[in-house]
Length: 211
Image (cartoon, rainbow, N blue to C red; front, side):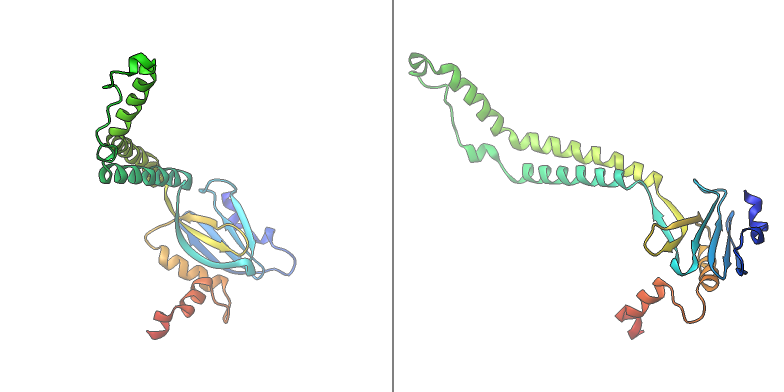
């Protein structure tokens, strides 16, 4: 399939002609009068992908990864920070005061000594609740680092086509000359008078207008 980039004419529709060819790393992008054809044999998935030219809104360098790991790590870290903060700021022992339900001579006569002992045990746990919260919060913070590390490991920087109404179309891994490749692709895809999405965003930025 990698050789198809040299045989694009066989893939063209009637009346369609090639406007430009741009090499992007191991990939080849062919811009025609109607479509953008991406030959990406080194990428995961299909070797050849196409999109109607007016649906391409921009060419950009994007970094992405397994976001589910990032979200899991952030959630664990958030809970850990909350528990750690409450545990350090709140002294539950001072709030409860000096309570001792077992030091009552009449409890045995009333037959409620066992119940009061259970209640006293719960009170003792509450006394140490701040310590437990600090410990659990610290563990959650440490546990949150694992999925975040997985996310960072899976993160990739790629050259993509931004598609209107659809997901980005990855073309190739980012290279040192990615900025130059982006410029050449934009020049090839967008005809004179048609701006990319990044150009539109810059035109709306008041700082750019002041500059």
